[in-house]
Length: 277
Ligand SMILES: *[C@@H]1O[C@H](CO)[C@@H](O)[C@H](O)[C@H]1NC(C)=O
Ligand SMILES: *[C@@H]1O[C@H](CO)[C@@H](O)[C@H](O)[C@H]1NC(C)=O
Ligand SMILES: *[C@@H]1O[C@H](CO)[C@@H](O)[C@H](O)[C@H]1NC(C)=O
Image 1 (cartoon, helix red, strand yellow):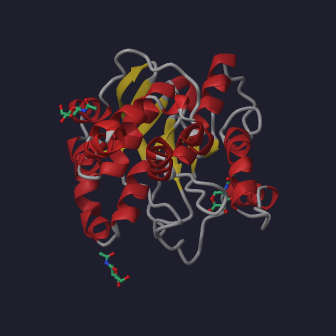
Image 2 (cartoon, rainbow, N blue to C red):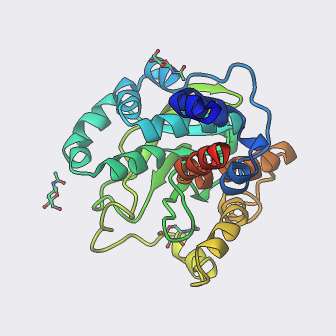
C-alpha cells in the first residue's frame, strides 16, 4: 500500500531524490556528482545573460530544458560563458533551426566552460578548452582561446573560414560566474564541417596524445575527468601562466559535471527503481 502511494507521488519522489542523490547508493554511483555543498543562492545564469546584453542567446537556453538545467547546475562550481551577442544569434538562426534538439543543446552548452575565468586569467590561458558540451574524447566539443593583440578570440576548425569570434565586452565577472559577450556564434566541429582549407591550429598536436582507446564506455568515463583537467588551459597549455590552486580544485570538481549530465535521467530511474523495490 505504502509503495502504491509512493508511486502515485512519483513526481515528488523524483524531486526529493534529485535533491538527495548522495543518500541513494545507486544514483551516487552512476552520477558521480562532485560532493560539493550547494551555495545558498547561485546566480541565475540566463537572467544575468539577458541583463548583460545577450538576451537572444539566453532565450535559446531557456527554450532547451537540457541546456538550461546544465547551465544552472554548473554555475555553482564556477563557470565562464561566451555569450554571442543578439545580432550574432540572429545571423546564426537559420543554421540553429537546422539542428536537432540534441544538437541545439550541444551548441548552447558549447558556449560555456566549467571554470570561472576573469578577463585577466582568460588572456593568460590561451589554448584548447573543454566546454559544458564535452562528453568524453569522442564528443570533445572543445574550442581554442587565443589572444590577438589585446583581444581574446575563440575559434574551432569549423566556421567556414569566417574570422574567429572575439570577446567584445564583459557582462558579468563575479565569482563563480563570468559572462563575456562575443561577436559570433562559435561552431563546434562535432556539429559543423571544418572549412575545406583549415587554418593551422595548435589543437591537432594535442589530439594524438589524447586519442581515445577502444576500451569501452567505462574506461572512457574514467578517463574523462582527468583529461578534462589536463586539457583545460593551465600548466599543460602553451602559455605557462600559473593558475591559482583554488582554481585547479574547482576545475576538477566542475569537470565532472558534463559527464553527469547525460546520465541524470538514468540515475533517477535507477533511484526510483531501487526505492520502489
Ligand atoms: C532565472 O530567471 C528567469 C527570468 O528572470 C526565470 O524565468 C527562471 O525561472 C530563473 N531560473 C532560476 C533557476 O531561478
Ligand atoms: C540545413 O541542413 C541541410 C541538410 O543537411 C543543408 O543542406 C542546408 O544547407 C542546411 N541549411 C542551413 C541554413 O544550414
Ligand atoms: C578537440 O576536439 C577535437 C574534435 O573532437 C579532438 O580531435 C581533439 O583531440 C580535441 N582537442 C583537445 C585538446 O582535447
